[in-house]
Length: 429
Image: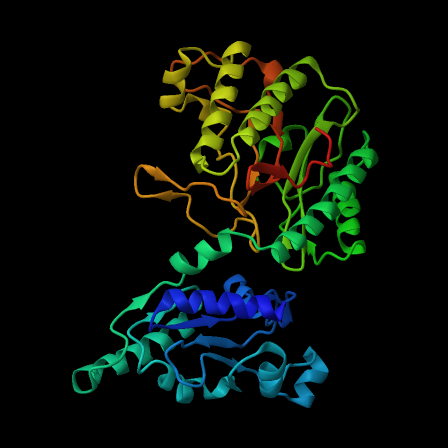
């Protein structure tokens, strides 16, 4: 993978011109008191370096004669490593991660200016780390103060996202291999969960079975908090309590995926706890399934992102009209977004290093992102009729027989050269 990380850096530096890019590692997050969560590297940082330690900074300076890729890292420290694990150290940063130069993180203030003073701009994302934001702004202000005398230095700070995230949107073969592995593990977990589910069991038992398979098969763990939502809980989009006892004649919605090698899967299936749909459940399920199948059919090069969502919206609106849950002319119902009473979210999102991966969906007011080979997105329409759902203005009352039904079906779809591939097709629907 080091060759691929190097190629990514080169590609980014070609786009930067004579700018200098700065990337900060993720911080250690505290669970409680002095107990920390397991470390997870910041995705942009990892994408460019593969370096998986906190307290690090990566600098890309294509204009520098000797040091185009520089790492600032924690130095080796035997006592601290005894407590918190081995460090790569300064020499290891060069030998193992290909840095042209590396320094202890404590020397950042001293060494950073030499990589900024010849740059015409600083590429940096002003993120949540306000302390580090201030460090970057301080260096920029100092260089700007001397600009009239030197005539060189960064005159602007530009976010790294627009150029880097366009790269991340198109997955390489190596990335797709990891995503396929995450999908295979997640498929196995979903299929086992369906077989394990029965009335009387608790949602957390299903969660435990799913996440056991994640770890058993070598995944880091869940890509996001697993949603195991039975009965009316299925109408809560991000339900994670997972503590209810499941009953016969109810639905179980499972939204769960694993993270493998930093890449994620994201699958949702909904099925009857007792093995058989009620007529109302089946009617709603059939609409959602048809919406998903038709939306997936729109995933191909040259189509725009909104064509996927628009297709799902139309199928769901037509289905709700057929059931008497909406009333009116289809185009007008869509224009007025009356369907949002029952389908209130988008039909999907980009998927990759982040579950809700980076990349634009829209350029300005009218132009949607065009799908291209290597994009991976989720397709996940749903219908949710909560116990307290209220009809939109001038729409029919909601009969109680529909209440408490929440259904979502989600797959991970790769855009290929001539169409698409459903990476998660191994879970029945």
